[in-house]
Amino acid sequence: QVQLVESGGGLVQAGGSLRLSCAASGNIFSISSIYTMGWYRQAPGKQREWIADITRGGTANYADSVKGRFTASMDYAKNTIYLQMNSLKPEDTAVYYCAGDSRPWISWKEFNYWGQGTQVTVSS
Image: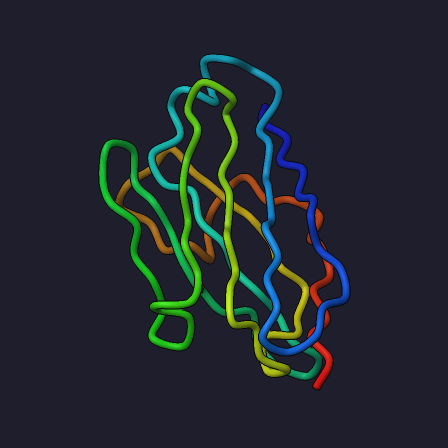
């Protein structure tokens, strides 16, 4: 099994920056088999949404709402995915989750591995 643990959330003023981290631990074979890892968020009263992901050996993809402001990156040696968030807006306030799976053909909503989430609050 794989455990994902996010960190780095907090309270920041609009225009500020935060960097989220998500470390994978557990079965080494399962971790090395993960094909896609990504970041997702859920604001109060809204559905969880995809904001960025990286496939193994590929480039990062971003939702339009964060493109140009957020940067996702992977450190395979540390089994950690990061999300650098710049120019934060109040509408970025949400619980941020990382998730991953070894199956390249499935929707992120079906991913096997999910972190517990970290709160990001952006004040105006």
